[in-house]
Length: 112
Image (cartoon, rainbow, N blue to C red; front, top):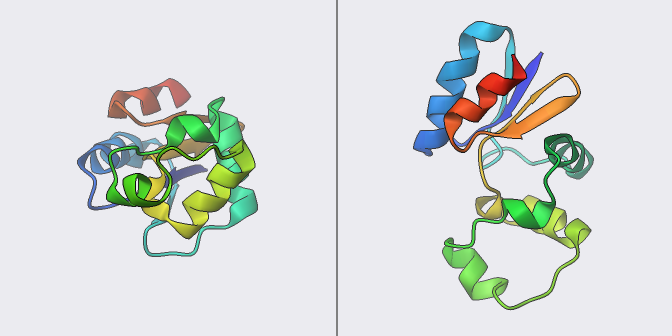
């Protein structure tokens, strides 16, 4: 099973999805329109080997308006992603016990 934290409006996310669709069953988590499960997101991020603070989209207006200059813990960043999904870099793709950030989209191929 492959999971993708996907934003269909994002070109990188769409490209990554195309690369994995023929690799097996894909569970698509459209995190911008679905409620994100905090525990599942925390686990997905951990599988990438990245810190939540490394997955913050700093060019988003919500970051500039509400988070820029603030010092958040890694857990607080995950909570912020749940509250403000636009902050989360995408896509995150998980296969088994390994995950990657699909930027660039070709990163997802390392899962296969």
